[in-house]
Image (cartoon, rainbow, N blue to C red; front, side, top):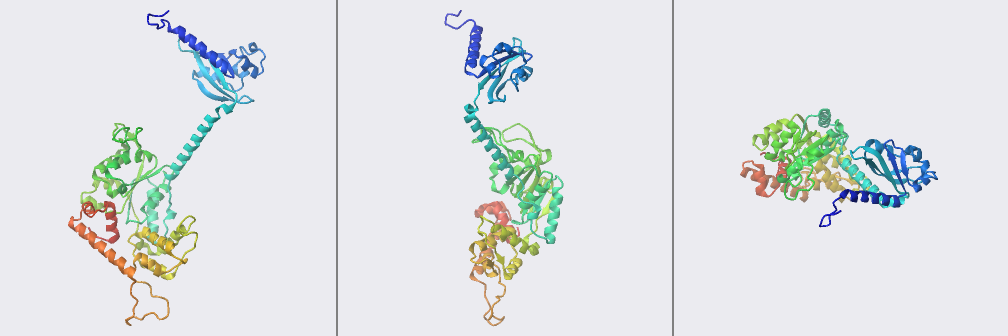
Length: 487
């Protein structure tokens, strides 16, 4: 029966016919078909399937429990749970079978049985699918392992080389900071090892198994910092990812978030950071969703935070919230007795396979060690490493003396040459500084005067001075600390 436009009046007949055709199609191309009742007893089995399990007549299997006919069968589980097992591998003592199992329901929705189809008896039929799945799984596992490795602490307190009183004190402070969960503020000049200490504190803390996520505030444009910290909802802004973006606070959940150059954080974001520190929750950009987070904050800066607070460029409440535990990384000139051990540790790293030293073994002459110990190192350990790396790259000999190093660090005077006929004081033939030394000193003094004049012209406002001379704010702060300029 149908209406004038040809639409059937009774759809149930079509549905019954479709189900009957579908069952016949599955039964014909599959390796075997099985139907069980609500007690998982076999009520019908195809001849080919029965023969596979040793029954010459299908009637011999009727009424038996499914497990008695098919070892390891999960048809009973399908009947009991009412949930299908769409794709599975059935191990039966011979070659494995790829099977699918579906529950059967009555008009009230009650499970009254189940039907199973053995789709393939040769695993090679699914080899391309399994190969693709295995490859994707291996790539996912490798990516997760790589990401987890990248978010682990790379340094320990043993990486902070030195046994001077200043070094031992900073290690003691770092261990104390690692034992609690309060925010930590790392202070010190550029190149003193604040990042190393942040890694060591995380790696020694109870959060060591969690991620260590780093944000260099000075390296990210102000307009992107909020998204970097808190993430964004899908479509929150033009060009936003369709799936949204997880922020660093979310990625660092259960671990440590290291905020490097915290003194460069814009004022409008400082209030939001303070709220996260107090409430342990935040809202991604463009979302009303509240995200709870369990993150320990370690912040570092080479800027004078109290001076920034006094100048209104850093929030006092955020400063007090961060300044719970303070660790001061000493400048290299305050631990001169560590320089020899530190220099050799750097040389060993530089000469490791794959580095510029090409496996050579460098030795520092006594005059070179005296020169290194006498220099004030405004760039601290970073400058020391730079100096030794240049010496390794440019030296033809494995013995590094003071004369080679002096051209790199601009030392004001070389140790007296240990050769006959050295000029006597007052003879008029005193050794004069090398031209390279005089040049470096002149350029350093020019830079100091230039930056001091720029700061004086702006009343000590670093951001304005940096903008006028075309220099990054963070770079100017570092120059001020390295050159000893008073603001």
